[in-house]
Image 1 (cartoon, one colour):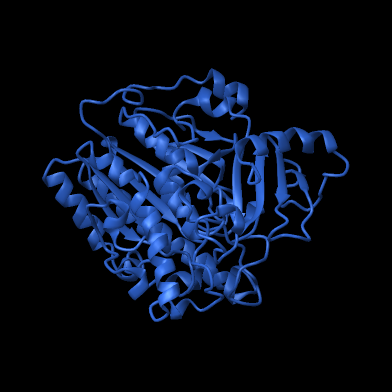
Image 2 (image 1 turned 30 degrees about the vertical axis):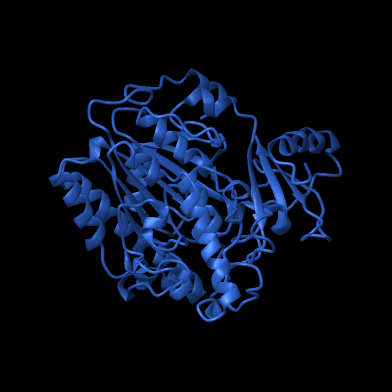
Length: 434
C-alpha cells in the first residue's frame, strides 16, 4: 500500500482510541531467528506457512517491519517495553567480561552479579504486563525470555521460573513451549476465558531457532527442495513453528474469543541459513543489515482495523503503543513508537531507527559503550553509521532497499545529500555523543 493510499485509508477506530465495552485480549506471537522472506505469504517458493498466511490475510500486514536490534535479548525487551535498547539498557545478551563463558555465569560471582543487574533493568521498566495489570489483565509468559523469573517482567503467570544466574540464560522451562507441548498456553487461555478476565499472552517459542531438529514428517517435505540438509532442516522448523501458531489460533476460535483478541505477530530477529554449516550468514542475525533486522509485523483485530498489505516501514517499537491505544490507554512518555492502527501516523513518520550492540556488554550503565552501528530506514533508503568505539573499520553505508533489497550496492559516496539528510534524522533520534 502506498503512502498516499494509507493516508486515504478508512481506519475503523471503534475501540482503538477509547475503552471498549469488553477489553480485548492480547496475544503476542514472536518467532525466533526467522528471515523476513521465509513465509509463503512473503513469496518464498518452498516454505509453507498456511497458518501465519491466514493471520496475514485477516489483519494488517506490514511487509517492511523492523526490530531495532538484531539480537534476541535487546529485541525482546524492546517489544515488551516499547523502548529502544539505549533506553531500557538491555543492549546485549550477556554482561561484561563474559567473552563466551556463558556457562560460567552461575559460578562466577562477577558474571552472576552482571546478570542480576540486567534482570533488574526489566524489573524497573514499564513493561506491557505491568501496564495491563493496572487495567485488570492477567498475563502469561511462555518461551524465549531473558528477564529472569516471569514475575520480573510483570507477568502474573509464566513458565520461566529461575533466575538466569542459577540456570538457563534465556528461558529454562519456558523453552519447552511449542517444541514439546502447547498445553500451558492453551490452559492459560481457558482459565482466563472461564474467569471472564482479559489476558495478555506472550508466546515466544524457541522456533525456528537452533537446534534445527524438526519432525521427520516435515523434514521429508523439504529434502528434495534444496541440496543443503541444513537449509532443509531450517525450512522444516519454520513449518513446525507455523503448526504451533495454528494450534493457538484454532484455540482462540474454539473458545469463541478470536473476535475479541488482538493478535500481533513478528520475529525477534532475522536469520540467513548457511548451506554448509548449522550457523547463520554474516548479514543476518547480529548484523546491521535487513537480513537481521527486517520482519513482517502483523496486527489482527477483527472488525476494528484492516489495511491489508502495507509497505511503509514500521518497527517493533510500535507494538506496545498500538496495544495500549487499542485499550484506550496512553503510551508512556518515553515510548517513541506510533499506533500501527492509525494509518496517518504510520504514513507521516519520516523514518524508523535502530542500533546494533556487541553480544556481550561493555558497560551496563552506558549503552553507547557497547554500540557498533546506528541505522535508519527512511522510505526506500537505508543509512548505516558505524560507531568508532566498536566498529573502527566501518564505513557509512547507504542503500536503496527498494531496488537493492539485499544491500549489495553502497551509494553513500554517490549520494552525499541523501546521507546528510538521513544522518540529521538519525542524530535527532539518538546521538550517543550528545
